[in-house]
Image 1 (tube, rainbow over the protein chains, first blue to last red):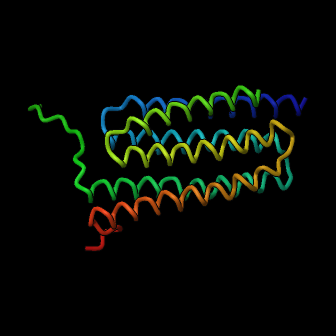
Image 2 (tube, helix red, strand yellow):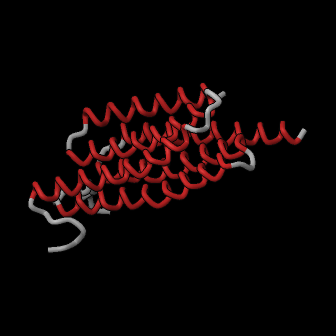
Image 3 (tube, each protein chain N blue to C red):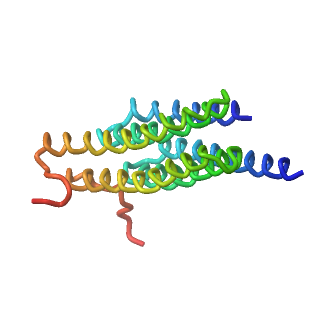
Length: 105
Length: 90
């Protein structure tokens, strides 16, 4: 019974994470501007990767596998946003203008 | 079920590749490469579970760090080439 509950939880996490990753990828394809694409990637990737890794942790149980997954999660949480921040900083310093709505409100 | 997840991740990688080829600026391409790196890490992890060999997680662990370092390295090369110094230094 406990195994069944863990399995169902892990599948829900895995499928939810995969759907978030796909939504982030579609956002990268369809958004009009570099900075909006940056937004789509950074947010959807963090949430989707977290959900997929939690789903795999539920499959792994209490073992070395879970420790490795936790390490991957830890590195991903720190490196993902800092890479995106460095990318935005580099684009701004290269004078890439954000797309703004110039009409009067 | 692992197969479903890996197919969805592969579809996301394909969509990211389209952006990497089409991207109007260089930063769009770097962004797509960064996203594909993250997706590859997850793909390797899921693939390890799918084939019943969780040793693949070590490869995923190394790939996270390489992906981060490569993004920063590409940005550094671009900053040197365009004359803008990185990290706010004037």
